[in-house]
Length: 145
Image (cartoon, rainbow, N blue to C red; front, side, top):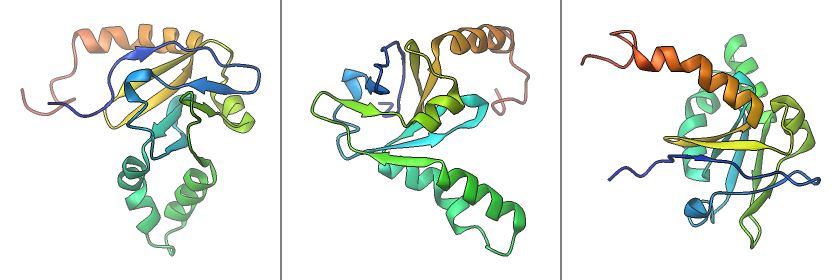
């Protein structure tokens, strides 16, 4: 059985930047949650264990490599660890809300080993743009058929 994150959820963010996590994943995030500035102006949500897997290569990259240092600095300085409150809410820091362009209407999308937080309008645009590629993916996109 698949044990990753699936689905699309549409909670509202309050004026303090608090968001209620999807109820089905409340237990999964009980040990904590790592919020990471993601690509495409969204935020990534990982369990602590999932973050360790995601960040391992970057953390262990050689400090003598300039590009690796830049990646390490950017990723790790734009990561926040939190403990969900009793209602299953987290607070998205203002700096991260600004980066992702989040309004009150957001989307939390399950994407396998992580969840992503998007502004609802931006998610709708992104999803529409991906439709053609999903309908007829390139033969080499996901490996041999």
